[in-house]
Image (cartoon, rainbow, N blue to C red; front, top):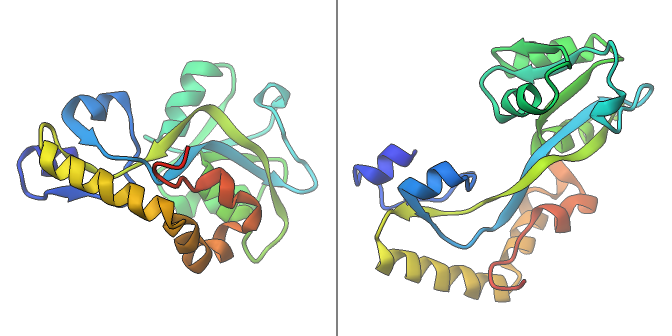
Length: 187
């Protein structure tokens, strides 16, 4: 997505773009509208609330994700079961009641709140929390200023909480609304 902004194929990236230091060197980020972090989900009969409690459990990750990178760097002794697809990871997780799945907290919250109701979010936040924000091409000050002004106006109207309630409440539940939603300019 950074390339699209750098080559002027698009003026704005808005959907699910995590702010990272590496990306901030290449693009200009606007005001954030959502918080995100890594988290974990486990079966309700074997809830794991700390990675320090992991012994022989299978820790499932998707290959190439921030979850894999984080665990490798911070918990090198934890044996990761890496899968190339969500479908394969989901199947392995559902077939092992002692397993732990580490992924974006939005993913694990949605999984735990799903129809099965057999799973719980054991760790809500692993590592440093990040934000999701729109981005524009580096140096496009006029568009950056305009978007930030609009984001702050929307934030003053609690737009993002309203959007969450209309579109994401069924997925994540009311308990996570204030954890996930950011109203720009309303710190």
